[in-house]
Image (cartoon, rainbow, N blue to C red; front, side, top):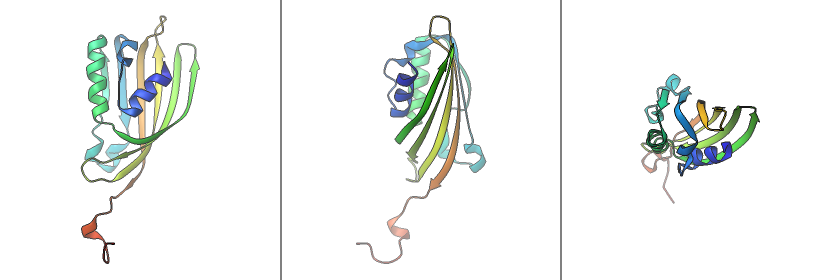
Amino acid sequence: MVKEIMDAVMSGTSGTIARYFAPGAVFSNKNNAGIIDAAWFDRMEGEYRLNGEEEAKAFLNELLKRATYISYKPRGTIVEGDEAASRCDWTREDEQNGSLVTGTTMYWFGFTSDGRIRSIETIGSIHSVIAARRADNAIGPML
């Protein structure tokens, strides 16, 4: 289930993962984007309580609209008892100016006794922002 959720989140297609959330599940999302004041990283920071599958589906769809990745690489998943953790490195493109952004997100999952998700906490960290090359800023003739 953790792999399916990670694949859905990173690929931008929620599919049917909303069914895994227990009523009242909590999704907590934090990142370090505020330190560089990047408006393109409007990623729904905060804590959200999801009351049922329809609310979880709406939340996930909105979250995924704000997080489109060019590439991602899972870096491992650990499952122990009723908890799991996963890490993923990613690259995305700023939809406003074309800059490439690389980072890592850690995910911590808590499960109910019947195997549904009770909580997800994410912490994202941006590693670099590479400005897009613009033809009007280029030096010399364009080939």
